[in-house]
Amino acid sequence: MAGLTDLPKDVHQAFRDTCYEFGVERLASLMGISRGVLYNKCDVGDSQHHKPTLQDVVLVQVITADKRITHALSRLFGGVFVDLSGIQGQSDEALLDLVATWMREQGELFARWQEAYGDGRISNRDYKAIRKEALDVVAAVMAFITRVEGIQQ
Image 1: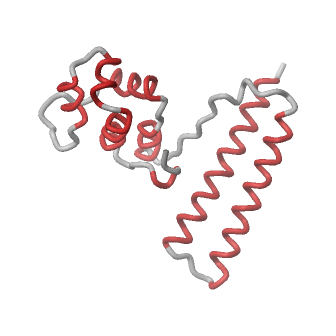
Image 2: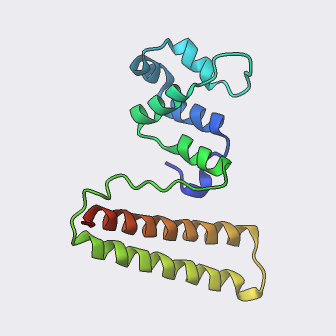
């Protein structure tokens, strides 16, 4: 799947991309709807009928295990989605690895910043690289805090 900065910003486009990548006919069968209805729900240009419902959005993500729709919703509202699934099942020893990952990501962010701002300007390419590194730091911090939450008493 694409990186965080490459995900669709449009929720309907994210829905369509998820369905088409998984396979509309196969997905429709698993959802218990006709393929024609799902094709219509995927039509981003059609505003008349057959738009995805909240139930469709959730079901598509559960079946496909693809979270790009949630990423697009997060971006729509000015945020980011950090996938923390699987963190709770990690061992207590893995906490040290999470801290190390956090520190590594933070170092990569500062290195990218130093490299990009060396000339006193930030290009669009520089911004995208810095944003990617910053999102990696946020994800690492959230993974750490989620694991700590799992061991609290």
